[in-house]
Length: 108
Length: 527
Image 1 (tube, rainbow over the protein chains, first blue to last red):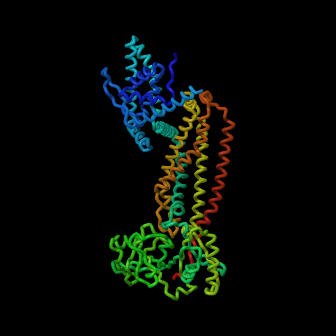
Image 2 (cartoon, rainbow over the protein chains, first blue to last red; image 1 turned 180 degrees about the vertical axis):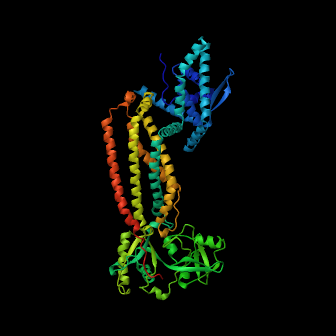
Image 3 (cartoon, chains in turn blue, red; image 1 turned 45 degrees about the horizontal axis):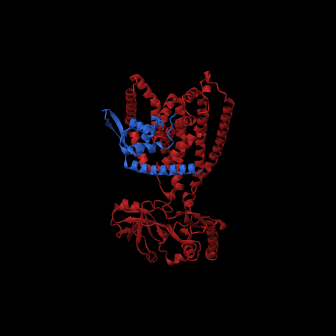
């Protein structure tokens, strides 16, 4: 089956959610996205990295270079307090949107 | 995120852009390495794994570019590149650049210098509360063949104060001289004898101490108010000046206050001492001693026209039998107009003329740029072929024009300074020896003029230059099909230019009359 493109505007929400569990590097985030979406989402790094950099610039994420478990160096991203707040807001919003959409679909 | 924090993050990012770029490189490399390692674990050969990983990244350079343009402040980066590109273009055509910058320097410098005078004389607020409500009231003797703006008499002032319905109050001042002595070299300073309510009418407060009271004025008390200038110059800004007795015209006067530094009032900025008018009783009943300059404040809601009619009627009534020259009317002139005098008309003409000059310069430059646009066809075509959108091309052309206008404005400001020294002669005496300076208002004006000029001469060439399709420009010899239309456009530019030149000539023809007429002097008894 062809993989799905990530819907507009939800990539930030998913990145924030994944990072709320633990700090992670770019490749880890893309792997996690693939696994968690049951292999449905095509995670193009060409859209992952712009999002990461913008979130970092906005102060939602903080990044530093650290050693991985395989002893390589990688840039790890973690959530800031402001990122956590944004996650809560976006999550709440998403819940409302998806509830509304499925209500409409089921009610029709 | 607040605007301030966003701005800070942009600045931070620009400051460490090279490191950020290195960071991005490293990070994408790590991504490829990790992806490749996973592929190898899944059984691919090392080379194959690397190829697939790079493929997955969707092209390394594209990914980087997307990160770059996705960041806040990315436009700054683009603008920086366009500016550098614009400067390179200018260096490549030194003759064109020199002509363009010189043209812009002359016209932007000219209009900026004139604006500085315009601003200082006509726009800047006068140092009084709500100065728009202030008017000067003169006797109008034109019916009997005299001056339309003759000094009034203290007697008229008394009557007008008592009977008028349009002013909150009227104040009166007379010429006077003061010989200050006793505490150093005797010094003759310009002074005014003013009624106690002058300060109330003008709505000003002294910087130190107080002004004199109605009682002091009526009783001829020996008190006075100093100008900031005299206080500093002669008394060294002494903090205990209020209450000090100084010798003026060989009599001891008590200093009760010092006016603020920026205070001045008719007839000139040079007045150093204000003392009570203290009209003697005979002067209060004398309708022929024209020595008083009168300033009044309109009641709220009273129009100038209403005040004129009402005061004309009152004046005819008051002077019906008392002035041997017969009954006369009054002339009411808003204070600003009074102070700017003839300069106002001259400045407005100059402002228009220099705007026309700037416009002519822009039309010329637009023409030059249009011609040059044809030469640049192949370069533009190449950019289009490489994927530059029309918006990008227009932005780049306009940035080049802004660079040109910026350089022109910079050179223009250098030229404006000597021009401002010359224009200072226009500042009316009532405002005194105001120095015209390049302050932030003048700088802001020059910036706006430069941006407006850049748009004026850059828009058409940018629009036209960005329109061609890749094939057109790349075709050998760059022959283009837009010929007829471009000639039509360039011809109309020449028509506009000629029209502007004619308008300028007419302006120029009418200006000398404004300048050569000497500033008319108020007549009346010198006191």
